[in-house]
Length: 540
Ligand SMILES: Nc1ncnc2c1ncn2[C@@H]1O[C@H](COP(=O)(O)OP(=O)(O)OP(=O)(O)O)[C@@H](O)[C@H]1O
View (cartoon, rainbow, N blue to C red):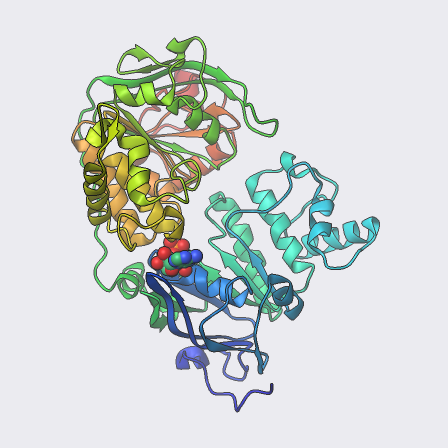
C-alpha cells in the first residue's frame, strides 16, 4: 500500500543535523504490544532517516528489545503501523526483514564454533553461493569496513570481538539499509569499541540507517546522531545525544536524578578467599584453561577482575563456585577451609553466594516463578525446615528482593523468563546479596542493566563490603571496576595479572593488560603506587 503524504518525524531538530532533505527510511507510528502483565510498547512512534545513527535507550523493561523484535519480524505488534521506504509493511519473519534490507546483530551471537567463518555465513544466506565466491565477498566486505576476518578460520579459534565481526560482516553481505545493534559493545575491549564505531560511522556515511541500543551513555553521546528514550513502554523524549550530558539522558530515562555510589577507603580484615596456584584444564575444547591463578580477597574488600569474556572468566567462576571441582582441595580456601573439592551447596553452607554470568539456566530457572527461584539458593534461610518447603518464607524473601532492587515484574509468582533481561539480573544479584554471605562472587553484575539500576547494584555490593563481606567481581565494564574495586587484576588467556589499586592505574593500562601483556610475574601482587609494570617487575 502506498503511504499517505510523508510528515516530518518526531525530531524536528533533525534539521540541524543535515538530514532535512531526507525522507525517513523507517517510520513507526503508534506501535503497541501488550503482554498479560504489562504493556511493553504503548503507542511508540519513531523515525529513522538514511545515514542516521539513532539510539534507543531506556530503563530495563522500558520496551527497547520488544520494539526491535517488532521491526525485525520476531514479534507481532497489537497495533500501530510500520512505514518502510514510504510503503506500509507487515513484517512477519526475520527472513522477510532481511529481504527488505533490515539486519540485526544480537547481543548473544549465534555462530557454530566448529564451523569456519564462511560456513557460518553460508548458513544465513537465502541462496547458495559457491565457496570461493563467498570467501572473496567476505574478504572484500571485511576489508572495506575495517573488520578483517579470514573466511577459512574456525570460529572457536576467534576472540569474542572477532566473532562479532563475523556477525556484522554476515549482515553487511546482505547490504542492509537498516542495521539494528543490540548492546554491541558489552563484549568488546575499549580498543575494539573504537574500531566498531569507525565501521558504523562509515556505514552511516554510505546511507545505512542504524538503530543502536545501549545502556552506555558515553558511547551513545559519542556515536549517535539522535535518540529516542523509552520509559514504561512509551516515548518519554527525543534528543540529540551530543547536546546532552549523561545526567540529562539518565533523567529522561528514569524520570529523576541518578544516584551516585562511593567507595570510602577502609582497611580490609582477615582473608576470606585464598586461591593458590590454581591450574585447571577447561572441560570445553574451546574453553580457556586456568594457568596458575593465585589471589586473595579479604573481609571488607572488593577485588575486581577485568578482562574480556572467554579468557577464563567462566572457568574461574565455575572453579570458585564449586560447579567444577579442583584437586587438591587446598588450591581454593574459603574462610581458611580447603573447598576445592566441595560442591556448591557445601561452599554455600560456609557462607559463599555467587551470581553466574548466564542468568538464564545458571542464575535462574526460566520457567519457574521468582519465588521458586529464591528457593534454589536460599533453602538454608528458613525456606526449607525439616525437609518441608515453607512457601510463605519463600514469598516474603522474594518480595523483599523485588522491593529493594526495584525489580519490574507482576509479582513474586511471575515466571523468571517473562522478565526483561536487566530485571532478571537485578533479581538474581538481589537474591544473592540478601542471603547475607561472608564471601560473594559476582560475574558481570550489571550486564544489560540500565544506568539507574546499575548504580543500585553497585551500591549494594559496596554496602556488603562495608559490612565486612569479601567480594570478587568479574566484569567487562572497566568504569564499573574502577568505581567499586579496592584492587583490580586482569584475567587474560587464563592468566591473572598482578592486582593494582584503581587510583594507581589507568583504563589504558588495564586495557593493555587485557590483551595479555603483563609479563609472567607472580599474580595478585599489588603493583606499587605510580609504577608501571616494568618497574614492578624489576622490583619483584
Ligand atoms: N514474552 C514475554 N512475555 C511476557 N512479558 C514480556 C515478554 N517479553 C517482554 N515482556 C515484558 O515486556 C516489558 C518490556 O521488555 P523488553 O525486553 O522489551 O525491555 P527492554 O527495554 O529491552 O529491557 P532490558 O534493557 O532489560 O533488555 C518487560 O516488562 C518484560 O517483562
